[in-house]
Image 1 (cartoon, rainbow, N blue to C red):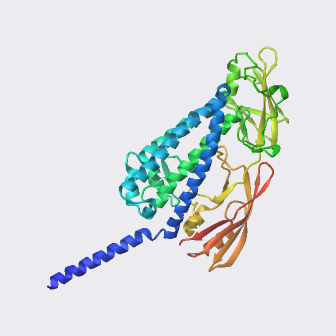
Image 2: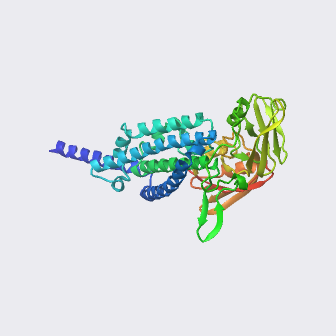
Image 3: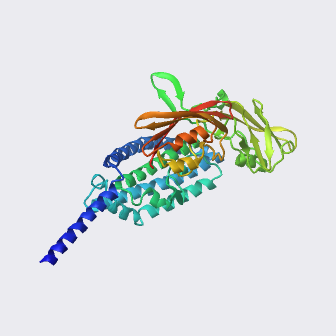
Length: 456
C-alpha cells in the first residue's frame, strides 16, 4: 500500500512538472501579442484586396497597349518580371489555401489555433507548404537579379530572401525556421499574409514602371474637375504632334536599325534611383570610348568620371536633368535625349552597431562591446554611409526617472557615455536622442530617438 502511495505521488509530481514546462514554453510570448496578430492578419488581407484592384486596372491598360509596350526593351523586361511575380502570387495563395484546408480537415480554425504550434508546423512542413514557397521565392529573386532591367525594391530585404538569417541574439537560423517553424499559428500565418502582400505590391510596381515607359502614370481624375493630378513628379510634357489623335494608329516614326552602340547604351544605362551627392553609376560595363565613339552631355552641367568601364556622376542638386547622347563615330549626331530625376537623400536609419542589436532589448555587455552608433541609407545596396554622425544625447532612465545624461560627439561612445553605460542595471532604459547627422548633399538630419531596455 505504501508503495502504491509513493507511485501516486511520483506521478503527481511528474504531472505538475509537465504543467510547469508547458507554462514556461509559452510564457515568453504574451497572449495579447499573439491575439493582436489576428488583427494584423485581417489588415494585411484588406490591404491585399485594395492592391489587387490597382493591379487589375494596370493589367487592363497593359493588355490594351501591348503592341506599343513590345517596342520598349525596358518595358518588356519589367513585364517579364511581372509575369514571374504572378506565378509567385499563385504559389503563396496555394500555400495559404493548403493551410486553411488542413485546418478544416482537422475541424479547427485559425482563431482556435492562434496560440498553437504543432498543427501549423506539421502543415507547413509538407510538400505543399514552406518547401514549395521557399523554392519559389528564391527562384523569383534569382530571376529578377538576372533581368537586364529591374527596379530597386525591398522584396529581398523585407521578406527576407536569404538562406541563413542571423537573429537579434546572434544565432544563425535557416530561412524556414526563422520565419515559420516553432512559432504560434498567429505568427506563422501572419508571415504568409505579409509575403502575399509584398509580392502583390512588387507586381504593381513593375506594371506601373512598364506603363510609365509609354507615358502612362497613376493619376487622380474627377469628372467634375478637368484638372489631372499625377502621382509622380517626373512627367513628360508631350508636344502636340506627339499626342495620338482619336482613330490614329500607333506607328514607328523611325525606321533606323539600332546598331551595337545604341543597344549597348540601353543595356548599360542606369537612370532610376539617382540620388544627390552620391557617386551614381550612369553607365556600367560600357566598352565604347567617350569622345571617340560617343559623347554624353548633361544639363545642368555635371562632371562625368570614367572608372574602368563604368561612367559615374555626382549630382550636386536635386531636380530634373536633361541627358543627351551623341554618336561620334562618323559625323556627330544625337542618338536620343532623356530627362532624369535626381532625388533627395532619404532620412538615414540609426542603430547601435552590430547585426544582432536590432531589438529594443539589450544586455549591458552587448551595449558596451558595440562601441558606437552607426547610420545607414537603405538605397541602391549602398555599402557605406554618405555622411557622418555629429552628436547625440545619451539618457539613462532608472525607475521611470532620468538619472543622468551626457552629450556624445561623433559615432564612437566617448568616456562620459561609457560611464553612463557602466552604471546601467537591469530594467533601466537608455535613450539616444537628438541624433544630429550631416549628409554629403549638404543637409543636416535629426534621426528619431533610439530606446533600449537593459536585460541584464
